[in-house]
Image (cartoon, rainbow, N blue to C red):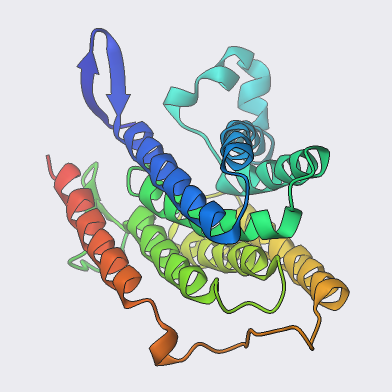
Length: 281
């Protein structure tokens, strides 16, 4: 991981800083959505904090089991060395979502309404956090100007590819959130959208291959998409009430939140500029 500075012997790494910033912005989004939806802010903040913890555990376990189990069996102490990298966002999604659903049921928190409040917060946190990730893409077959030179090779900036796609997905969710047909719709659009984003980015990353250009992460993404589509169809059939629905499948130009578009556009520019600056020094 790229070290930024030390404070009293405590190391601050780039990835840790962007993850912390992403979590902070995500928490602010949750508070905003909790107020808009009339949800209990204290319960949601507790849920958010615990879900982050379980998400990190899931991300680490998935990386260990799916990508490098032999090494960690031989070096069990390394399992706890998070500062050395090795997290899988798909594992975070699976474990974090499972825990959140269980916690909401236990605490009698409105499940799907809360899931919709969390979805934009999660993806904006992922977009910001990904900027600091140190897992670059594969070598470029041509000298494209946006490539990043690492170890004498020009690599695809896979982190920025994913960050930009996640910013775009945030805008989709943010502009759709007031125009839904049933609770849970925004959450499953997020699950499907992020899995599609990750599927695309995986073509530019190095992961254990299954066949041809298809990696194990591709299969995880496809599996999550399939499960999300089935769950979404079930949820729509169970809870959708056509007579009370005010939402539609399309958003008109007049319904777009232009303020959010400008802010996220600016965030994209800042993220890209920061990414290239930090990797040029």
